[in-house]
Image (cartoon, helix red, strand yellow):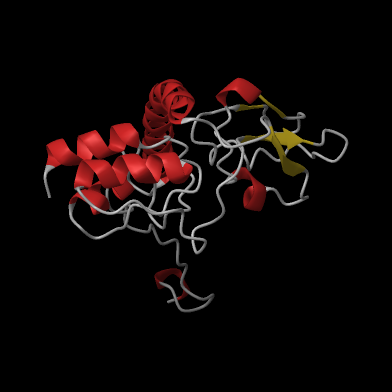
Length: 207
C-alpha cells in the first residue's frame, strides 16, 4: 500500500468517522482503497460526489453509493432530548469530534457545528434520547463536504489523543492497585508469625 496515495484518498473523504464503510474510520478506509481492498462506493456521508472523486483519483469507474453501506442524503446532526437524558455520559467517548458536552449525572447537549452526524452516539445511549435531524434539504456539494472535513479532522485527532491518554491513565491506576505495586512494598508477604500455645498440662511447666 502506498502511504502517499492513502493520504490523498483520506483527504477526499468527509472525515465523519462513521464506520459505515465497514472500516474503523476514514483513514482505514483510505488505506483499504489504496491497497485495492475496498471500492469507491462505500461512503454514504460523502455521497456520489466523493465516490466520483475517489474513482477519478484511482482511475476506476464512478459509482453511486452502495446501499449496503447506507443511503446518500442531506447532512444531519445529533439532537438530544434533554427531558429523557439521564446523564450517563456513555455517548461522550464515542463521539469522534467531542461534539457532545456533558458529564455524568448532568444533562448533555450537542455542539451542532462540530457534529459529523456519524450516528455512533445513538447505539451508545441506553434511553434512546438521541436522534438525527437534517440540516440541509439535499446532499452537500463536494466543496462544502471538504470544508467540513477540514474542520472535523483536527477535532478527531485531538479526540483520539485524549482517549489514548485517558486509557493510559486508567491502566496506570489499575497497575498501581495491584499487590506489590506500592513503593517499598515487598513482592512477597512477610512470613506468618505463629502464636501457638501448648495445650494445658502438656507443656514443660506441667512436668
